[in-house]
Amino acid sequence: MKPAFLITFSVAMVWSACDRPDCEPSHPIFSQHEPSSPEYKKELISQLKSMEAEDVSYWFDSYVEKDGNEYLQFNIQGEDICALGLMKVEDWTEEIANIKRVKGKSYRGAKFRGLTYTIEEQADGIELIYKDLESIID
Image 1 (cartoon, one colour):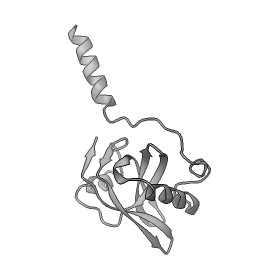
Image 2: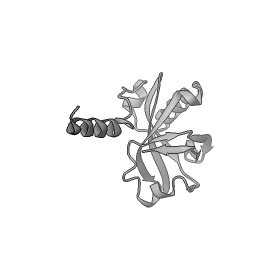
Image 3: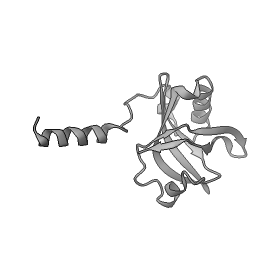
């Protein structure tokens, strides 16, 4: 093999290592409503509750500020789910503090392994609340 081919192949493999698989929204609500809407959140939470945590992957999409709150938006994917999801962040742990500092820039597409959250009823509706993660694979 020629060195140029090896370099090109190696770069392509590294570049594609964190690419999330393509998918189409798994429910019509995910195409018809915004991730912040009550209808969207209700369906998303219903689907997440019916799945095992290890069967779902979370790929960082963006940092969102809305109505005085801060959120991490994820592409949420699994065998039976494909949706965007907002997780409200109330405690910026050391693992994600830099995401807030840079407003999510350079993290798009990163996979969050071992992501944990709670589901809470709040004055402004039901929310996924970020708790912790094992690692970020960028």
